[in-house]
Length: 456
Ligand SMILES: [Zn+2]
Image (cartoon, rainbow, N blue to C red; front, top):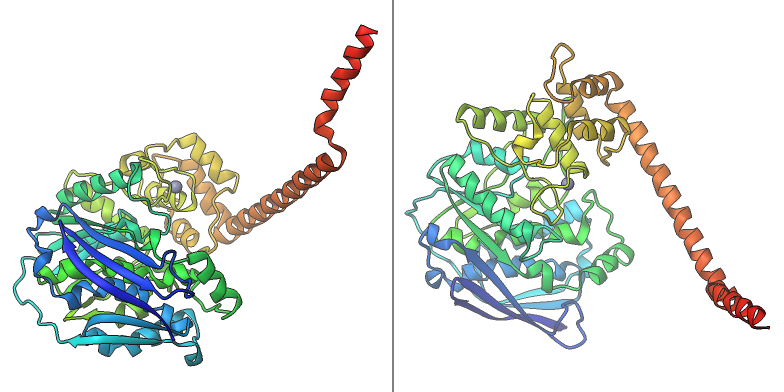
């Protein structure tokens, strides 16, 4: 069996460095020798030293990240060391992923070889008793205010987003956001970066192999990209261990429709968070899993207003220093804010313009695959209330109802897609005609003919 091996783990200048090798011909990693890092930013906020962290904990993030390869490929994953409780949990982790993303076939499996299994002693004393993951979004801010105070350490890991970049305006914004939010909730904070998503796997090839060869079409829609999400979050493991923190808390992204809970089937599913634990550290129940998004937004705003503070609710994926305001996550959150009678400009949407936003909504440009968010927004609009911003549009939306708005927005997007397809076909056809008849050369020949006629 060909091998992928975690061949080196070192700590240097606040960074954990890994080397991962693949045998020639494996072709699952972008390079036969991959150099990876996890870097803690502003670790001086918490006075932590990674040099004291045992190898069995330093190895946790990269081991979890590599592990899913062995679910689908006949390869041997060789790891130098693993924490015993994590090792004992491997079957449970496999079962959870298989249930959500599969079902996987045991026949597909490679194997994991761990050279040394260690019962890592856990540290008992800590200044903090929990990590709260902070991305700036509604679920994270809600988890932040529900766990405010000096016992919470806020941790931001921007690289868990698929298209995250290590520098640029959005990264700067993420630093500034967690810094400001930590002041609002009176907690300390650390930002962690890594290059796992950016450099390790040949994601396109693996993703298409799982779709076409393994025919994975489970309830989780984000496939290979989602499978690695929690492993990437576990970059917090060495930091949490060094500080003696036992509980990892993430905000739940559950939706509701007509009052009923709807699980978000993706890489953050509670089945998965429940399955991962090591050296006494594990995920707690997801924060706010029974709270509607509209209620979370209202709670955040009321909480901040009562303390005369403001926070940015950052939901956008665009790599800018301000949010686009028009993508589905931006629109969803601005509607949530409007329904609390607040101005989105005061809560992180610098580009909010009342008349443009009304126009966007009335022309059915807000579309999401799952209508649960729309149901939630429209359900909390109160017909008896006069809203200070976008009042007429909100009442119009209430009158239309979520089913009808969803239907019209969906047919509009289908129509746009159809037009887009025809446009592409016509462009292709013009390209072919240009090649066949050399249409682009006609002006040249016309000029030559006219010149000759003039000179005659
Ligand atoms: Zn946006």
